[in-house]
Amino acid sequence: MCYTITRTFPKEETYGMISQIRRAAASVPANMAEGYGRENRGEYIQFLKIAQGSLKEVETHLILSERVQLTTNQQVIPVLNQCEIVGKMLRSLIRSLQNKQ
Image (tube, rainbow, N blue to C red; front, side, top):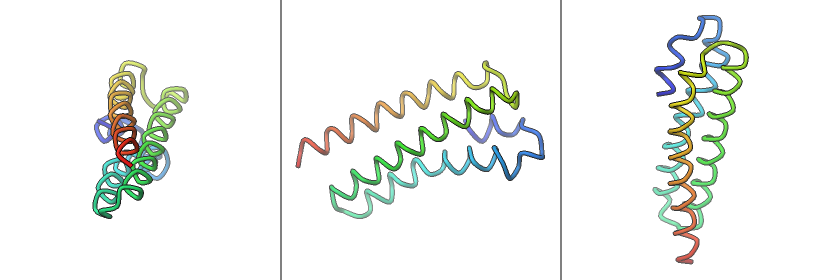
């Protein structure tokens, strides 16, 4: 969704907001995978928390993009809603893993 929404941004944002949003969005699953690959529950939880931070970064950049009129509220809301769903799943997974320790 983040790649789709940033396709409409002006070309001068290629190394600015477009790059920031795309990198943060890609960082969420990448950190989840890296943490899982460590095969250590503590490290996995830490990487899940980093993924949460990246997700918040995506949300912030999207809100800023709307405020500076790079995109519209109609385009941003579905992505923010998806971020909320992913955030809830991450929090639940972290809690579940912490309770097993």
